[in-house]
Image (cartoon, rainbow, N blue to C red; front, top):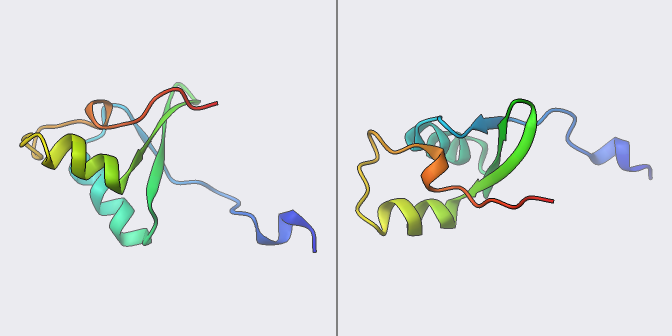
Length: 77
């Protein structure tokens, strides 16, 4: 089997300035563990369900105003 048969062809990405509520909703709706974060068409990080819980909910952040930049993991290679 060739990899192109099973690989994802389009990725749903978020920007650093996206609301964390949007990120959480997209993660839940797609039933995945995280989303890629991009800026100017470059991959700059990732936000995962566990990072969302520990960095946003665990710090009592205001989910109505928090942005992905405050919850994402950086240094994606």
